[in-house]
Image (cartoon, rainbow, N blue to C red):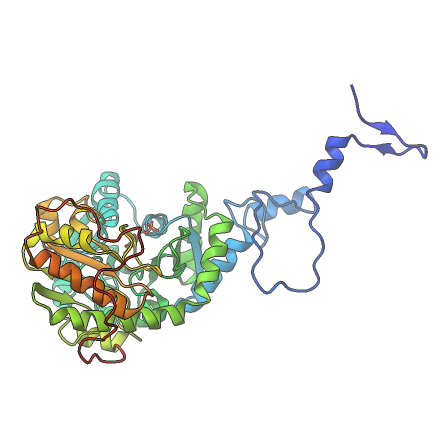
Amino acid sequence: MSTTQPEGDGTVRRGFSTRAIRAASRAPRVDQSPTTVPIYLSATFAAGDADELSEVSALRVPGYSYSRIGNPTVTALSDAVAELEGAEAGFAFATGMAAIHGALVSLLRAGDRLVATRTVYGSTRSLLTSILASFGVDVAFVDATDSGAVEDALAAAPTRVLYAETIANPTTNVVDHAALAEVAQCHGARYVVDNTFASPYVCRPLELGADLVVESATKYLSGHSDAMAGVVCGARPLIDEVRRVQIDTGATLEPLAAFLVLRGVQTLAVRMERHAQTALALAAWLERQDGVQRVAYPGLPSHPQHAVAARQFRVGGGMLAVELEGGREVGPAFIDALSVPELTASLGSVHTMVVHPPTTSHRQLDDAGLAEAGIGPGLLRCSVGLEDLEDLIADFDQALGVVRGSAVGTGSGSRPGAGSGSRPGTGSGSRPGAVPATAS
Ligand SMILES: Cc1ncc(COP(=O)(O)O)c(C=O)c1O
C-alpha cells in the first residue's frame, strides 16, 4: 500500500520512510568553525549534479564522493602529519602496514630491486620477502648503519628503493639519513623511511633528504593504544601515486580512528619529551644493574650510533633494547615478573610495554633471520610509557631480582601484582643514581 498522499494544495506528501531518511540525513549549516575536526562518519557525499559527481570521483576537481577515495576527517589527519613531517602532502591508511605497502607498491614494479636495512619490523620483513618478492621484486638486505655497505649494495645492481627505519625495531640502531639519502640519490634510488619509532617530533627524515616517510600512526602519533592508522608523507607527485594505489587496494582509514589520531597529535610534543626523559633515566639506571648485559638507547653515550642520533634527533625517543644475562630463558621470565607494564606487543603508548621480539614482533623470522637482523635470543624491547619513573625503576628492580634468583624456569609464570594494582618493590621513592636530565 502506498504511503504517498496528495496534500490539499496538490503537492505530493512523501511517505514516512522517505521523509525519515531525508530528514535524518540533513546536516545543519555551520557558519562557525568547530575547534576539533568533526568525525565525518559517512561513506558517501552527495554532489550538486551528475557532472560534479563524475568530476569529483575522478579526482579532476577537489571534493568528496566516497570515503574510500577521500574523507574530510582522514584528509585532516593526512594534512596534519604532512605538516609535522615537513612534507608537501600526506596520505593516511588503515594501518601502518597498509601505509608501508602503499608506499612501496607505488614505487616498485616486477623486476625492480629493493635494498632494505637488515633490521626492520617483522611484518615489514615478511612483506618484502614473502609478498613483494612473490610479485617479482628482488630484495636484498644490508646493515644500513654502515653507509659504505649501503653504497656497495646499491652499486652492485640498479636499485629502485632503499628502505630503512629511523630507529630500528627492535635493536634501536639509528641510521644516518643524510648519508643514506645522498647514496640513494647518487644511484637513482628512492629513499623510503619508516619513522614509527621516532615520530616527527624526534626526527624529520624528509628534511634530511628522504623521498617518502611512512609511519604507523597506531603508535606515538595516536599515543593511547586506542586507534590503528598509518601515514605516508612526501612530495605531491609521489603521494598522488600512493593515493592511486590506496584507492584501488582499499586499506581505508576509518574517520573515527582519524579523529583519535588527530587528538593524539595535539599532545605529541609533551608526550615525546616525557617518554624520552623517562627512557633516558631508565636506560642509564639499567646499564648499571647486575644481570644486564647491554642496554641500547639512542640518547645514551654508549649507543653505537649516539653521535648520529645527537645530530638528527631532538630527543632520544621512548624505545630501548635490553639484553639480559642468561639468554632466551631469562627475557620472558623478566617480562612475567614485571607488574607495571602492560603485557602486550605494541609500542608508543602511555603504557610501558616490554616484549620479547623473537616471540612477538619478529615471530616471522627463523633463527637465521633473527641473527641476520642482529636480534639476540634474550633481547627485550621496551617502549617506555608515561608512568612515574620511580615506579618503573622499582618494578624493573624487583623483576631483575626475580630472574637473578632461582625463579627462572621454575615459577608459575604468573605476573606478581598484575591486575591487583600492587607494585612489588615500590615505596622507597628514591631515584637511584644521578641521570642526565635530557637526551641528545
Ligand atoms: C616500526 C614499525 N613499522 C610499522 C608497524 C606496523 O604498524 P601497524 O601495526 O599500525 O600496521 C609497526 C608495528 O609494530 C612497527 O613497529
